[in-house]
Structure formats: structure tokens, C-alpha cells
Image 1 (cartoon, rainbow, N blue to C red):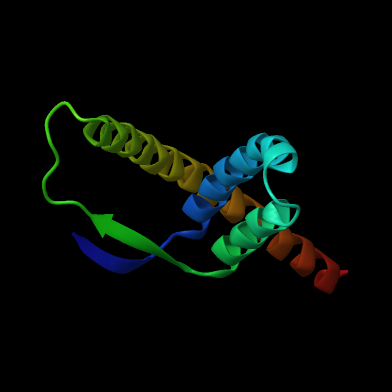
Image 2: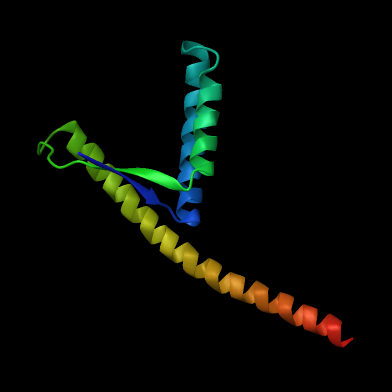
Length: 116
């Protein structure tokens, strides 16, 4: 098993943090009933650390049995990751065009104010 630190794109981190937020909101009521009181606080601290840290841990698993639960989980995680990469590429393209539009509007507005 190999462990490495990987720098993550901000948009990808934002989308992953939304999923983490949904998981926290779903798990919190269960933890409030069955776990200790500070479990909810620990979940929010984990989200905060995740958002502040620009790196993620990447785990490389070399061999997995063919029909084990771990192989199905890894397949699901790989599917999620490929969908996330596709979404980040599409949103990045849209935001790039939107940033160019907003930037040009601001520049023209600034030049218009300077001329008048």
C-alpha cells in the first residue's frame, strides 16, 4: 500500500466538501442519539481541517480479491472519482468563460468611468 500527498484543485475540493457536508448532516442525528456529545463537534472539525488543508492523502492499494466487499467499494470510489473529474472539467470550463465575461465587464466599466 502506498500513501502520498496530492495537491487538489479548489473546485474539486469544493465539490467533495459538499458531499462531506451531506454525509455529516446525515450522520449527525444518529451520532447525537448513540455516541458521545462531542462527536458532532469532531465531525465539523474534520470538515474544517479538510477545507483548510490544500492537500489530500492518496492511498494506493495493490491487490484486492476479485469478489470482496473491498473491491466493490473501490469500484464505487473509482466511479465517483471519474464522475467528479468529469464534473470538475465541465464546471471549470463554464467558470472560465464566466470569469472572462465578468472580467471584461469590469474592465469596460472601469474604462467607461475613467473616460467620463
